[in-house]
Length: 63
Ligand SMILES: [Zn+2]
View 1 (cartoon, rainbow, N blue to C red):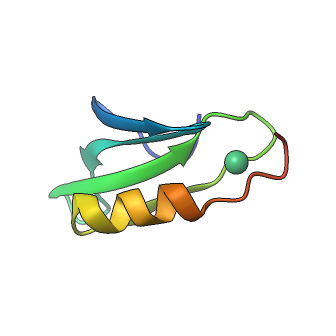
View 2 (view 1 turned 30 degrees about the horizontal axis):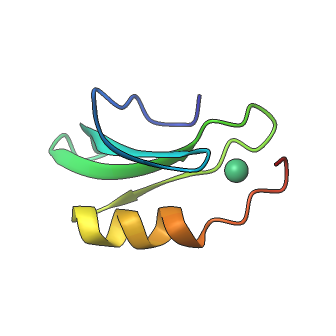
């Protein structure tokens, strides 16, 4: 589990889940989060396209 609590999953790209979450400022954010325990990578984006690009570009160190 990364930093964010994804409450609606939109896509999965390999180990990375893209979904919507409550962002730091309390609004809905798009989050890409790696499921690999030892990786812990996650990031918040303003739109789903940016989150998808980030998910596809993630080079996981664990897998
Ligand atoms: Zn990863």
